[in-house]
Length: 162
Image (cartoon, rainbow, N blue to C red; front, top):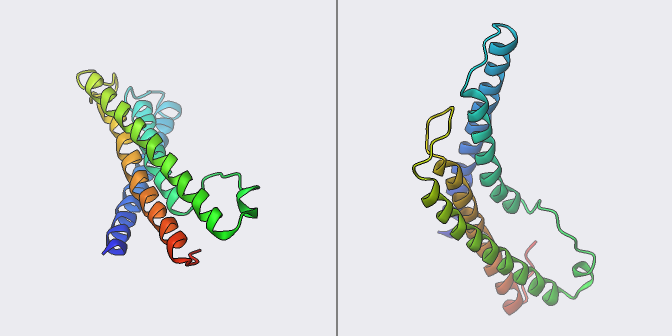
């Protein structure tokens, strides 16, 4: 069940990010053509490009965690015995969960504050920008919780999971 849910989350996440990336590139290319070919700049395109970039960034942190590609300094941890290594990994995941939880709390606060303030160019609430932070952290917490449980399972059962 867990694997089905995570695979579905992976598929949705990948599809949304690819779609947003294509939209961002398309909007920016359209803006460049309008500005340099037709000498007519669009008021909304730069803002929409930035908006999509923010969403890509916050949702993309989860993919980095899924692939275990975030930067880590493992000089000391790599030299630890297996159980201590997994304990350090579990503590690291727990710290990340706490940080993302705090970030989500303040993200919700910003959503409430910004609810009635629109972007100038794209005319939507700026709260939509902060929603990316909340969703990105929520997905990150799900992935971190899975890795935390795997590390604890390895510690308790002496299993080796790559």
